[in-house]
Image 1 (cartoon, rainbow, N blue to C red):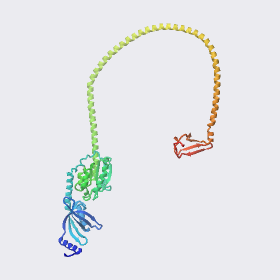
Image 2 (cartoon, helix red, strand yellow; image 1 turned 180 degrees about the vertical axis):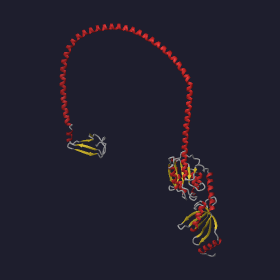
Image 3 (tube, rainbow, N blue to C red; image 1 turned 90 degrees about the vertical axis):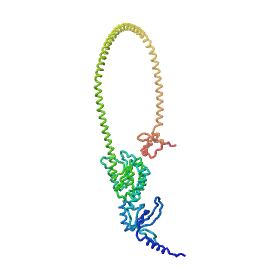
Image 4 (spheres, one colour; image 1 turned 45 degrees about the horizontal axis):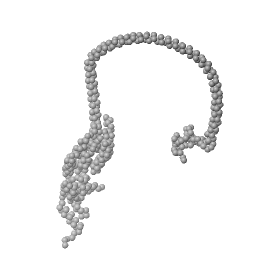
Length: 484
């Protein structure tokens, strides 16, 4: 039977073997899978190795950077690479291989080579750019047309960033008093959450695409460590697919980020973006002024040309017009002479006809006058006889009319007396005071009796007259339908 060992003895042998095998630190190429810093400043990592062209994990180990070493390594790495020491980075680290009987296998990181990470970051950057180009999307946002006067601007920035405030101040207080419609979509602009936060802001803007002319991504500058999120494939791809022109002013200290490369327009700082927008409108304004001046000049040229043409036509027409006037005057004089002779002949003929008509009328009037005198004498004699007869007839008719009139008057008086008696009886029956005495009342509004509810309103004061006394009421409810 083989020798039996306790677990502690086995772990002790493993520890001894590892100690003898790794007497000095070794350099290891790996990727940081997890990274946590506890309150004492110690950094705990999980290091992995993946397949060359895949995501399968080939190896994994725990690693530690004690606080004293971490305080030196972190700023050295980040200042050299311009990249925050975080998950997802490939690193070259110097480690001492350790094995503890209780805690097992681990690596203690003693040093880190930032130049390796710089090379890997450059490689990854080149791969992302090459991937975007191979997919044919790298220049898609650049191909969008930026409006001639972009004034409706969607802004992606941190609301507390100094660069955002500078951007707003420069646009709202521009010397030309151009007006901009600005809407902030807040986002985290650095760190591990920046990618998802900025993409989320772009997705919100997409819902209101028709409201905006362009998207501006700005922040107040920073180190390469702060701005490494803008070298991300997912964010860059989202920018290439966005339906509005994207303008960046994220303040990289050195090279352009990948987002800068795929954006429609890349500018250095937020204030440079503001100046770009203002100068764009100013350029369009100048273009309008140039068009106005050219239009005015063209109008002046057309007026001058037209005036010259009119003067030329006038000079060529004057002789023709003068000749026409002479000919028309000649024809007019001939017409006047002919008309004058015609009028004279006409008047002479009319005078002759008038003299003949006058003689004929005198003779006919004399005969007519004598005939009318004869008729008048005969009529006078007839009227004298008729007058005597009519006088007798009229006296008889007058007496009969007087008798009939007296009878008619008596009948009328009798009828009127009867009508008055009936009216008096009716008046007594309809006397308001007698009606009130029987228990009825009269309601008035503004001095007029109420017959229905159409003329009354809520809260109005109405007066009810009783047989003895009056009541003033306030209307609370109006019932349009009659009670049954």
